Structure formats: C-alpha cells, structure tokens
Amino acid sequence: PAAGGAEPATVDPAALLPPDRLAIFRAQVALDRAGFSPGSLDAVLGRQTRAALRAFQERQRLPPTGELDAVTAGRLIPEPPLLTVHRVTAADLAGLRPLGTNWLQKSQQDRLAYETILEQVAEEGHAYPDLIRLLNPGVRWAGVVPGDILVIPAVRRPRSPVRADVIRIRLAERTLDV
Image (cartoon, rainbow, N blue to C red; front, side, top):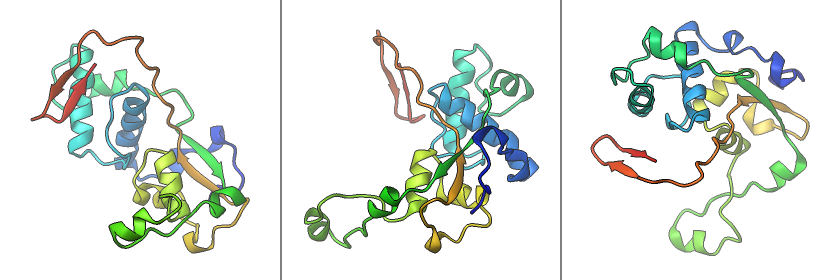
C-alpha cells in the first residue's frame, strides 16, 4: 500500500508530486478549502483553476488575472496537512457496484454507487483519478484490500455563509458568487 501506514501529517506532497505541479496543487487545496472551487484537483493550472483564482483575486482586491502570481500564492497558503490518508475498509469495497450500461439498467439498480475504490477516494479528495494515481504510485488498484492505505488531498468543506444577500451567476465565466 502506498503510504506504508503514514499518518496524515507525515505525508509530504513534495515527495509525491513533481515540483512544477506542487505549487498549483497547494493553491488548489487552499482555493477548495476557502470555497473557491478549482474543479477536481489535478495539480494543473487549467480553466477551472484559473476561474477560481480570478474569483479569489477579486475577493482579495487583487488584479483578477487568473494566474498564480507571487502575491496570490502568498495569500493562498493552506494550513497543513495538504494530504491525508484513507484506510480502505471492507464496507468501502462491499459498497462498490458496477454501473449499468444504459438508463434502463441504471434505473433497476438498488443504488448508483462508486464502481471502483479509485473513483470513491477521488471523490472524497475532490480530485481527478489521475492525481490519486500519482499520489499512490505503488498501488495496484485492482487488488486493493481492506486495511490498504491510500493518500488523498486533505480537503475540508468550507463553512457555509449564514445567509446570502446576493447571488451573482456569471455564465460566461462559469462562476457563482454568494
């Protein structure tokens, strides 16, 4: 198993991610925790991450460039840990279900669940499966068993605002501001 039983605080993203992707990953985790969705975490400066950066920059009264410049990065310093571990349980594996191939088959299933443990932990960590694979280089995904430890992003749900006075939807930018 990937992390060898490491505790969440000891999993170092610098040991698992290439240097060019580490700064972007840190920013994505900080944005996600602050309620600025960068989309699924992938450690890539893509369209959704740029939109989240612009929204964050506007809120911080910075020029909304969508770039991860030094000033923006300085304000996006996430509290550790950036990574945590998910210990696979028998219940995790028992809950997996293959997905029907058409709508009729899907409608007849007892529930629409995750098909694979990779899909489940990717969702838990708000991440693309490719990032989860990168964080877990030694894992044989078809052979995961209860007790295996998987490294995932340590995201937390942002606190919900008490009540929104205004909701602004910008379709062109694909953003929602509360």
